[in-house]
Length: 360
Ligand SMILES: [Mg+2]
Image (cartoon, rainbow, N blue to C red):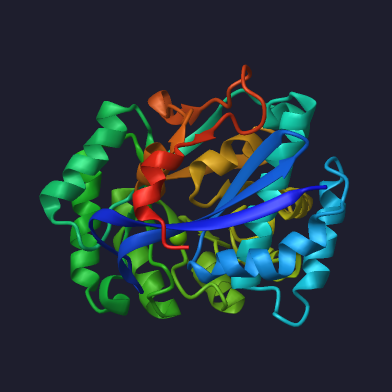
């Protein structure tokens, strides 16, 4: 019997954070713990606290009698259990956290590091520094970018643009110029508009940023507009990326031809079970796959994907995962290496440290 428990923790940000279409001052993590025969697996998602209740009501009963080695069976049963609740959104984040916890549990039962359970094809996975919130002043933006590039040797960084739903284009471009100056001529510069621009505006911004060597333009337009993404992609030099709101495989089927590099997130798409399918779909379309956020959940699975591009070393989540888990990874030199000496994810939840943030 596999027992599933979910809890939620709301952690204030270190500074107010915003992108092109959202602002926030805290981030909530829903943690799932899966227990069987003295073994203990963990998974999580960054989602509103009620997702923990959804896990308890719909998913825990659906997987309790599934064999601990049969995670795809548990995944299938969870997808069936949320039929009337709807798969995209909260249900899929709940499924994702349970699925990740079940894979961690299986690896621990077998005494294997998670990337060995999946079957590794690389020792190191590239990361890129991600943050550069529109709420930062120039000094903070420069400090963060220098920390990644000069301090940690990460040769790829991303900042948020599209401020005020695309209403501050001149500041967006000024911040891209500041970023290029801060990181020097060689590091790769990425921008994420979080869907803030129209197609024509996105194309204009991309052209204006060409002389800055803009390499990657994420969600230049809303990602529920594949035709718009494709139109931007066809008109600009830089790569167009999207996919962080992909909650199931059919979404990626419809998106993948519209972008140069799809992104997927194990905390949203349906956990490792679905993430591996998305990687296969990307491979079939001759695309690499980039991992969105939650870097410590992505390292092991990305080490097992031949067409893996990189993991987003997202400031907000790096900070939270470093506060709440022992065994976090070191991005020095621009890559992370899943540990061989530890079973599962190799992480231990710091329950006493987390308790003061608990909200469910
Ligand atoms: Mg993004």
